[in-house]
Amino acid sequence: MDYSLGDTVEMKKPHACLLPNGKKANAWKIVRVGADIKIECTNCHRLVMMSRVDFNKRVKRILILATESDQEELEMKKEKLNDPTRNRFLDYRE
Ligand SMILES: [Zn+2]
Image (cartoon, rainbow, N blue to C red):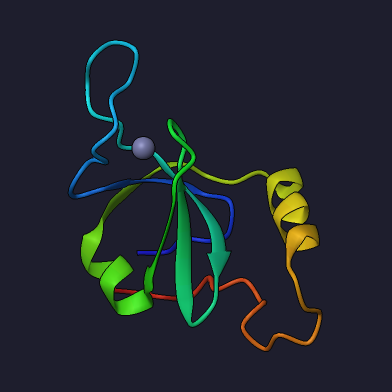
């Protein structure tokens, strides 16, 4: 599966938090792509970090592809310019 920074994905297991309609939240935004993947629950904004291997096992599908402005905004938030893992990771195939 291809994914990149800023995409919103659905995971195999929903988050424990509930949406206003009573359903479990299951939309996560990818906020960091490096050696580890960091995702943010779009409902409660909790951050979860996991290895790429774990992420690839747990992700179900992409819900919303990131726009360029999403990606630029996230790139700007990155802590270190020299971080070798900061490049977008586009080529992964399961
Ligand atoms: Zn949540």
